[in-house]
Length: 117
Image (tube, rainbow, N blue to C red; front, side, top):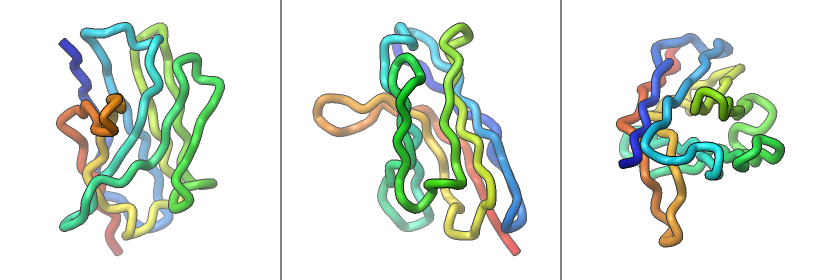
């Protein structure tokens, strides 16, 4: 079955950087568009970014455009999110996921990112 395991979260000051990783297994990773979504405290899920199966096309939410970069390595079934210029409003649990036809996501357990002054 699909398994997604995020890592790389942590505590960082405003203006700092983190690189998140997502290890995928149980499905043919290279066939799927992959997503990063996040959930801030007390809020719903927010789509952050996606990347097509081959890695040639990416999309970003306006809130992270120019600061975050999504990438993937299909040889080792890993998805990445480079996050620069982090701000307190980026504080959230970050999930990698596959979007289903219903619009819901199959997600991993998530990794916590806290940006604090």
